[in-house]
Every structure is written in C-alpha cells, then in structure tokens.
Image (tube, rainbow over all chains, first blue to last red; front, side, top):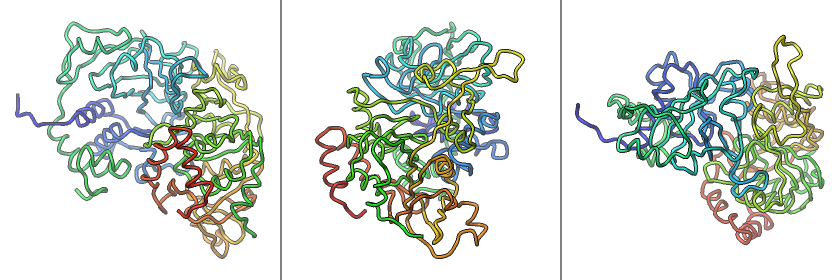
Length: 253
Length: 271
C-alpha cells in the first residue's frame, strides 16, 4: 500500500460522490448541499469539457435565466442526468420523506417540505441519495410520508429514479427491478456489522463487501487547492470549517 | 407614476386573501412584511413560490395565516422555520404540501389563461394523496396507459416582492429572477418594493429591457432601501447572517418570538 495521506470525513464523501457522478453531462445540486456541490465541482475540474455543473444557490454556477422553473423544465427534457436528494427518512424501497415524522398532517416533527423531489426523482436518470446520518431513525422500514416514491408501476412514465445511497458509513446501490438496496462498499473505519446494526431496512449484502476506496491523492490535492475556493462562493462557512479557506473565491488559481 | 409608502402598500393586502411570495434568494419584501404585521390582516392564505422563508415564518408567528401552500418553508442554512414548525405540530396551521414545479405550473396555467397544467412525477406520493384539488387523468394522446397529474390554475389575489429598481413609468427591473414575472402575470394585484426609483424608461435600453417586468403587470410600488433585509438581494447585499441566526434562536419559543416582534417589527428599525 502506498503512503496514506490523512483525509477528513467530508473529503472522503466528496470523492465517493464524485465517483458516482463521473460521466454525467450535466449534474445539478440543490439547496444546503456543500458536499454534493463539491463533488460536482470536482468532476467538472477533472473533465471540464464534458461536465456541466449547476449549483442552484450559487450565482456563478447557476446559469439559468428563466426563473426557478427552469431547473424542472430542463430536467423534464432529460437535460440533467444526476441530481442529489436527501431525506428525513429513507426506506428500503428508496421512498424518501422530507416532510416529517408521525401521522400526517399533524406531525410529531415537521421538517421543511418536499422541495422538488416529487418531480426530480422521477425524471432525472440517476438520483443519488445522500444523508450523512446513518441510523435506524433515518433508514427506516417504511417512511411516514412519501415525498417521492422509490419505484413506480410499469405504466408510469419514469425515466428517472434512485441510483445510490451514500451515508457516513457506506455506499448502497439501488436495484430498481427488485426495489432493494445492495451494500456496495463500507467506508474505512467502519464494518458491515455496524451497517447492519444502524440500518432499519433490509438490504442485500454480498459475502464479501469491499472497503470504500480512500480519496485518490491527486483528487485530494485538487479538492484542497481548487474546489475549496470554488465551493466557498456558495458555502463560505462549510469551506472555512473543512478546508480553512480564509478567503473565498478562486484565489488558489 | 406615484409611489406608496410601505404603510399604504400594506393596506392592499386584505384579510383572507391569497398572497403569493417568492423564495429567499429572489427578492423578499421584508420591510413591507413588517408593515403588514403592524396592520395585522387575518386569515391570510399564503402561496410560497415555491419555498417560504423567514417572511412566511413571521406572518405565521404573528397569527395572521390560516393556510400555507408550499414545497417547503425553511430558514435555509439557519435551520427549520421555528414558527411554521410549531404551528404545524400544534395543529393551528393548515399546510397544503406541494412540490416546486407544481407551484410554477399552477401559476403558468393562470398566465396562459388555461384551466390546468399537466405535470410529470408526483404519482405514488403522499403529496398527491392529500391533494383533493388535483386529478390524475390518462394522457389523451397516448395509445397506451399513461397516467398524468393535472393541476388547477391558481390565481393569487396579491403577489408581493422586492426588486432592485423601478423606472419613473412604473416598470420594474427584476434581472433574471423570472419567477417574479410568473407571479406578477398570474396575480390580480402585484405589489412591489424597490431599492430605488430611477428617472427615465428601462425600454430605452435593450440590455435593461430583457430583465424588466412591464408596468402593465404592476399595481403599486413602494420605495424601500434595503427592503429585503435581513434577507439579501442579488448582488446588492448579502443576507444578514448574524440577524438570521438570532431570529432562528429567538423564534423557537412564543416569548422569544414576541420579543423579536417587539424589537424589530412593531418598533420600526433602520436596517
């Protein structure tokens, strides 16, 4: 094994998400998503001619000019091929809940709402679910409210859907035909047993589960030198906490 | 063109009206919202286009809102909207949950003067299950089964937002924030606050004209420098992070919210 370079949890996750995004022509990233945003910018830095990135809450990286509707119109035409969604709860059929827990409508805990998930989950070919917290209260047998359904009956027009689920512990890939997650890799420092203990839904688990690759040294350097400055435009507090970017913008270039 | 004071503008938002408001990045008329809270109309039905901000949280906290239609209500990076969350959890607020493109589509139907718009997605969600006003029909052009959600046109009584500038003929420059245009096209009355009013006509300059909402759609304008504060406005000013964090903390309790109102809303302050 070559010499290990120390990396943070965020840097590992950026590299994990970037591998899932790679090959996309156009990746879009919604609100409150500094790690997915960094991953998208990393892919663009690696293949600038082939990767278009839209960060919705950026000025520089949001080039829509037709108002808030344009993201959805663009996605509806198949012009966006990766998007990220999260969930207050995510279940084993990849249903996601962004509305709250308890009996709707008078919920025990209300969260902001479904945003564009009820549409984008259906039309973006590969939606990557990303939720850092990996616990039985997040990864549940059945969500309390379906903001967006994991799978649809065959007569429903659905070019899009869930592709993978990434957490602090592992990567799952989603099999749409079987409506089940399969454990694809476990992050360094964590175990398959821990994933079983912390997951509230059933999933497929091969006999040998690989470890999630550590960040490629070249990419790690690129994240620290270039991506940190670029993500700071949208997420100055995140960039400063993770990369200690005192000054925002592309000063590293 | 004559402008109104914020106080006069607020009188055009009557009790029980359907009030359309923009998301936090688009130009939220916060100064006008403070004037509105002083007037305290009751039973507002708020349509968030498509996500509600601190503005909606304050209107809910002030006890002025019966129902909210929104894809989300949030303080963004400052966390959950505390008054919204509390009102849902104690059952005092009706929420019509929706999804962002559905809000846009329902306004676009009104823009076009057609009764409904179809939208992909939504099938199999609990959003759809709880919307008695939406219908699922089969695509009449398809040879095979192709179910599709139909959304009725929505016409806000009032659209309220803040923009960088108006000209002396009542045209408003919104730049690329075209969800404001959709709102204004669809609403019966459009109320706009602006940072400044400039002499002349934006249509004399083609570069400016591309980002203009014509006065045709604008009912009233009020001048409100820093009128989006504590939210930001485009490249003019950033959100006031310290103030928003303080609000998020204070508004967690009824007493804290009352304190906030007393300090920043009921006693007018300069931003």
